[in-house]
Structure formats: C-alpha cells, structure tokens
Image (cartoon, rainbow, N blue to C red; front, top):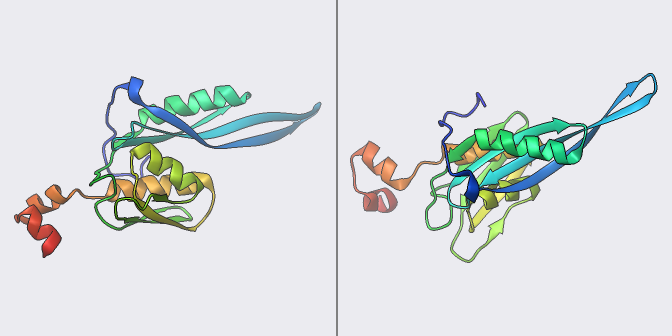
Length: 172
C-alpha cells in the first residue's frame, strides 16, 4: 500500500459489500505431480465513497476469497463523491496499469471495463466515463483505479485551500 498517500479509514463492517474481481489458479510442480493453489483479488465498499481492495491466497477458492475480503477490510479509503460521480478528471497509475476516470452527466451510467467497474461500483459511483490504458492485469487495473480515486479532491477542499468560494472553483 506504499503507493497511496491517503490514510486508511475505519468503517462499520456490516454495511460493506464485497466483489470478487479475479481468481487465479497457480500450479506448483512437485514430485507427485502438480499442486494447485488459488489467489483472489477482492474489492469491498459501502456504496457511499468508501472502497478498498485485498489479495487472498489459499489452497481452496473459498478460503482465498475469505482472506481477500479480510485484507480488503484493512485497506479502506474514503473517496470524494459529487452527485454520484467523481469531482474531476483524473489519471491513475500503478506499475503497467494506467486508468482515466472522467465525471459524467446524471443518467450516463457506469462506463468502465471489468476490474475498474468493480471498484467504481463498490465506491458508489453511478455516472462516470472510464478507460483502462496499458496493462489489463486485474491487479494493476484495480490498484491504478484506487490510485486515481484517492488523488481526487473534493470541491470544498479545493476552495478552502485556494481561499475562494466553491462557486468560484466551478465557474472560474
């Protein structure tokens, strides 16, 4: 988690919904044949601006998912939302994964691919335009999307930092 600047937050675990983004089977060749193991990347969120992701590894799929959910609950981030969309355009990057997240008009819907869609839905974003550039590896895409969302700044925060009104932030 060293690439993210935001501080992880605590939230009531009862209201978190989890989504499995990807499950990967790994084979280790031993003397008696192949031994299979599973890794699962999971995204959790409360649908109201809190989102997190985790990785779980185990010999069974269900155990890997459970471990992933536990890991995700330890890495939750607060995302600024503005009328069920993102406040501004933002690029996110992690390793080879690049993502572009743009605000959209109400009624547009969630226009995003696989791994990005899971993260944005969990965060509670309903209207957004998103594009994944670079790596399509779910691990990189999820981390790049979280990076883009964490970099977002709420309009009232920007207004306070600049010492101007919120209306002036939007209208110039």
